[in-house]
Amino acid sequence: MINRDTQLIGLIGWPVEHSLSPAMHNAAFAALEMNWHYGLLPTPPGAVQATLSRLKKHGYRGANVTVPHKQAVIPHMDEIADSARVIGAVNTIVIQEGRLIGYNTDADGFLAALREAGFEPAGRRALVLGAGGAARAVVYALAGAGCSVTIYNRTVQRAAQLAHHVQKQGLRSPVTWVPITTTLSDLELSDFDLLVNATSVGMWPQSDASPWPDSFPMPSHWTVYDLVYNPMETRLLAQARAAGARAIGGLGMLIHQGALAFEMWTGMMASIEVMRAACERVLVERMGQGVTGHQPDLG
Image (cartoon, rainbow, N blue to C red):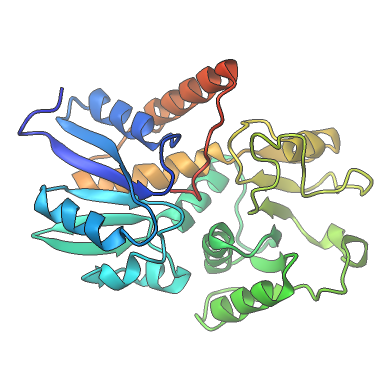
């Protein structure tokens, strides 16, 4: 029960009603017997500054930020972490003595989930599908971990801009992009070790869609990571398993980035198991009810 001693955290985005974050974080608070509460802060475009002012006025300890505001909040931060500046997005805000400090936990959350599943990216080669906000964190994370990255995106200009931006950061591994005239059949797919779907293709309710064509063979030695977590078993993951490849769903990244934010706010480590169970419970309930589940951009 919320009382005047309850420490508040919120989720800034539009829409936010179907986010898994409240269930995930409130379960972690309860497991640690903490008088904290994670709530929703629906914020339409143009209302970001008003919501941030509300956080300070009402004594919030922090917030998560999801689409479409991960970039819009940046000018309003009093301080911003280097990784968030480089990625160009803030998904976590910590409030200290009235100051808003912006972080990005998406990149580290992705790496934690990838390694949890048994894939070490150092010295490997990855093909990343997409060049939007999710892809920015993934490409930054992989290149920083020593993994060579090739970006494949429908809009080649966005892919080129992302590659050039990350290359300028002086990270450990090269980042390249695929020209628009290139098709999957033109790529030496056997040279890659990891495929990451950083697009929304395959997300509920278009669960029958996949960014990978059925007619095109998928190498069996690949690890396939789909950032989509709703549904938990996407068509891309099914294709990967059918090809003999390792398949990893996107729920782990959501949980790990959330656990990192939890520790920033509270100074305590959240239980990954508790967070995962809360997310899976909500997803199963929604699937049974046939309710649409808005999937935030990893926030």
